Structure formats: structure tokens, C-alpha cells
Image (tube, rainbow, N blue to C red; front, side, top):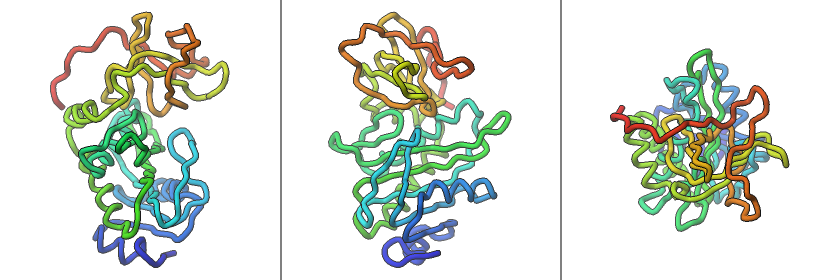
Length: 270
């Protein structure tokens, strides 16, 4: 099924020649279509885009609002060669690439937002299929909030920037990420999935982003706790009424947070 206008098959083929693309005038969500395509062998770099989505979702199933004809929401299939425990790295790659595409003023809010002038400009959600030891594939869902026609060149620029970060050495991407990330140095409260009054959470100062996509929080009690993006429900400002700075216990069998101990030694570039 094709469509007319700035996201037509012709417009996208001109902007991204040789790339596998599916484009629709309307769809429940590009993620649902991309997941099926990835499971059935869809190639790395394949893109699904729609002018209208009835139920677009981001990280942790958070609802996205996309203005038809004025926003850009699409899904990108990747097949990363990374260990299963590093699946959160795809978030780092995606937001870093989007920030590159949106310009020097773009900043990052861990784990899934890019902001320009302090306002959300883009967001990311990632779904992965894990094999016994590695990530089999990942579907990266991207929302660009303000994207007026013609949108095909912007789509191409964002996809190419994500793929450039995806192929770059991880140490270089981490270094750029740290410079752009406004979350680092702030005190935050991370509430993990499942959300609820008794759900696991940790409050601390965001200290460092790791090569598995996790954010290390330093609590007031001196613990260093790594919070993984795939386990995060909400990242909030701390509750000033709370006197509990340490991590709450995770449900049995769900290691949602991990005490990483003292600051790590500096790693050589990879």
C-alpha cells in the first residue's frame, strides 16, 4: 500500500535510493508492521513510515502524539552484533544519531529524548529480540515532533545519522553522548517497570552513561546503581518529601537495578 505526497514511495526512493521501505497513508503503528517484518527476515536498514498512526508508542509503551502532515514517526530495523545484556545500547545509538541530525543545539535526556531549546524535539522507543547470547534484531521507533513537508529528506537524514552512530566505535559515541546529555549531573528518580505505588525505584545523581545504555546513579548512601533503559518506566525529578535515597528492592526474578560498586576504571577506546 503506497501513498501520495511527501512520503510517497517515489519521494522516499529519491531520498533513500536502494533502501527497503514500506510507506502507508495510515497505520495502527509502524512498530507493529516493522516487528512482523523483522521476524520474517526484513533486512537491516528497512524503514516503515506512515503519515498517520492510530496508536504510536514509544519506550515502555508510552503513548506518542503525532500531528498528521506536521510530524514524522517511523520505525527502523537493525540487526546489531551485540551481546544480549547490551540491548540498551541501541537507545544510546538512536538518540545520539537523532541529536546529530537535529544540529549542534540538540541535547539528550536519558534514555529516549532529544531536546532543542529545552523542548522535546524527538523521542525513541526500542524493541529487541534476544537470542541465547546476542541481540537478534532491534526495531527503533522514532518520533520527530515538528517535521513539515517535505519530510522525506529529513527522514533520510535521521536514518543515516542513526546508522552512522550505530557503526561508530562505542567509545566515541559514549564521549559525544556525555557532552550532549543534560541528565548527567542532575539528581533524578528512576521508577522501574512495573510502575505502581510499591514499584522499584532509585533516587540519585546521574553520574555516567555506560556502554550497555545504562545510566549510573549515585545515591545519597554512596551506592552506585545502574538503571537500564529497557527497564525504566519514568525518570522524574526527586520527590522533596521523600527521605529514601537508595534503590527499592526489585521483584523476585527481575534484576531491574544493579549495584555497580565503586567508579569504574577508565576504559580504552573500542
